[in-house]
Length: 128
Image (cartoon, rainbow, N blue to C red; front, side, top):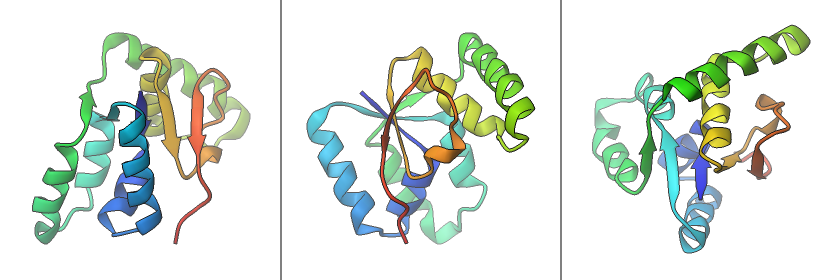
């Protein structure tokens, strides 16, 4: 079971062939999910012309809501890592907490955004 980070979704929507191939590869290995947070992050910059393709892409995934347990874990992550790095975002904490609490492998192009040691990663080199 995999959880896609928002950056993977953005690159797929931009037509990145590497990320599209990755998506096809992951589909053969198990189910793929996204956080409702990733939906919000994609929609904050969406153009009307991208709406249909975005909706079609999202239909391929299990969508995970933010539960109370995930929300609490997100807060703990932020407290721990903001003190250390001053460079962590709450959205990333929520995505990481989703992966941790649902035992999902996080697929990201930016592992540096996730200093957590208690989640599993499937990382790739930066596209573009």
